View (cartoon, rainbow, N blue to C red):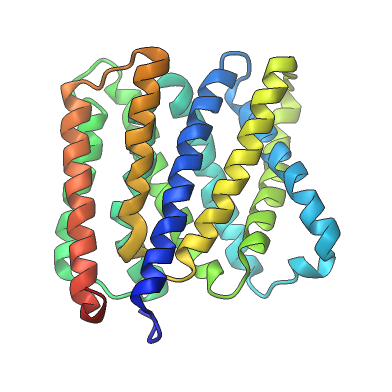
Length: 293
């Protein structure tokens, strides 16, 4: 915890994270629509390429000096986990229900406090470890144990949750020293270069509708990355991470309105456990920081 942390800082971080959640829900809808004509490798590459195009005016305005950083190993690590999470997430959006795919990603905040403690030294209580197990039990329910697709859904869903959590923690680390736009640009640039390799093996080109969807994905997702960096800069991860569950609620609404997707009892039960664990994590975070209660 930072010594100068104030309630206004937590509120500011939570507001930016809420904006991040809205952007990610909209991105999920756009990815689902675009996946009807593009495979996963193409989706990830074009998303990153479109994001890079959106960021080029910022680079031209601020110059190459704006990219100067002493945290390059952390930028590389953030790209590795973030890009992996993106591949898994886009695959989930194309093959699972919209709400289930979102739950895989937004189970990550339950794990964030533990990873933030291990890697960043943020305070934690022993009860949070039990809460993490509760949240993971919710993820398993969303994966529908005993179902015919559990064997291949489980590694995708659990890996997506884990890599997303690592990405959140690394963004928190980078936000301490690097401005939000620098964090976003390095991630987008490095992700574009890496994702170009599998795309070049079997390139796919979208039609006019696809280009519009990809532009929307790149723009909205890049905006989400910026909001995410701004969210974790002023407040500890454990205090604001549960706000991101707004994405799941919006995804369930969009899935119902656009694709008639109604969550089954596994998804509802898993969501209850995940939300409950998120609230318990937030409660434990307040106990660690009583002046902000």
